[in-house]
Amino acid sequence: MAGRSVSPGAALLRSSRMFSMPAPIPAPPSDYSSATKHYSPTATINYPTHLTVTTTSSSRINGDWGFKRPFPLKTTTNTTYPLIRVRQVDSTEHVTDFQSASDHTITLQKYQELNLPISVPPPAGSRNLTSVFEESGDVTALNAEQKAELSNKRWKFTGPWLAGMTDGDFNRFIEKEVRGKRSEFRAFLRENLAAEMTADQAQKARESGEFGESAEPPTVSARDITDEDFMVYLRELRQDRMALYALVGRFLDLAPVDLNTSLRFLGNLAPNQPRDIERASPYGATGPPITHPSAGLSYLRTRNFQENHAIYGPQKHHPPVKARILKPIHFATGSFRPSIGIAGFVAGPPIDDTMFNSLKGKYPSKFTKALHDIELEERGGSKLYVQPTMATVDSSGRIRIQIDEANSQSEVVQKEMVGEASVFDQVLKEMKTPETPRKERSPGFSLPMGNRRHGQRRDGNARNYGL
Image (cartoon, rainbow, N blue to C red):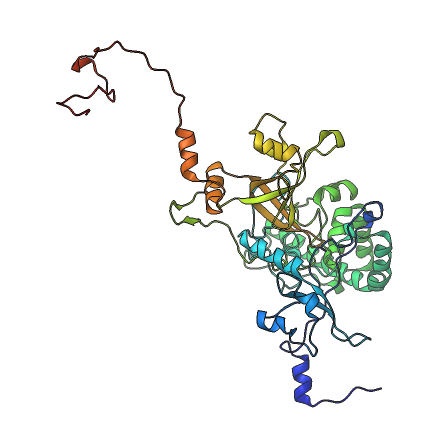
């Protein structure tokens, strides 16, 4: 049965963003190794797929969320925050399918409180952070020449990332996308050969002095290339796998792979063929992100700003964040690195020689106990203060946060802010010196004025009043 017709104005309002919800985005790809692992069915997925809807407190009591029917109060008022995600507005049973959306929404608020920008994944062993909003890499409107020039910096590609595809996906990609473009690829190779021949002729002419600086030899076009020259060029490409892969990547706009992987599997460089090996792509090892590298979490470009305390003034370090020990270090079970939760994410501790990877007894006992033992008597488990340093988004949409040690003074100031400690008590603790026993003096004994040291007191009398 056909639906009831509406006026053009009503149809326009229904399709507008003010009166309609956006379509849900695809769910994150599943982990193929999860078949042999145990995962909770209620675990939070990598990123949200539906729009979060909220309402005011007065409307929430009446079940009014802005839809055609009120929502049940027993379900919507049982949560702390009025946040839901609607899976289906009208089901076959004429009810609205919804569930709580506090998991992703509260996680977003907690992350924004960190004031931590999203960075481009740095090379291994490097601490130089680059914002994802830099103009060199955050460009999407590019022509063919700019795409080839910025292939190792940009994040958006038309083609897939071959290193992350399964055998079945790769075979389907070859059948549907690649096999029918053989003639187009040959035309692309002819254009590339013509450009190389033009550049070689110009270089030889400049070296021989046949043409001046202003004059250039005639340009070679693709029509001027004979079939014999083209076949020789194809044979040379089959022997030079790196050059062939670069041309295939430019033609299909493929995401680059890791440089070490390409050197290992594509073979050595061809003899007498110089190649300019540029810096590897930051997304070559793990793949480019499926959305913008910031994922909409933060729009900060840098963290180079100073925190200003109301009493102690500008602070040298950012305030540390209290983290939870999810999995302590346990050498018997092979757990050599702790799992630390911060702002709703599982952070990765540094692999350097820090207190996160230390043995017992090297660092203060309280910190060591939190990393190596499960404190069952403490509510919520073991906690400690850490300093977040970097956050990146991987190809599956997960947020990777790196943490480091927290500065001791910043930790005391932050504890005072939340009422866990006092800076004055810490100062007194550091200034406290061990007491030494005083010598017993005989009655009536006193030093002359010239032998008295500064700060040494004398029994008072009627003349000095104890001063």
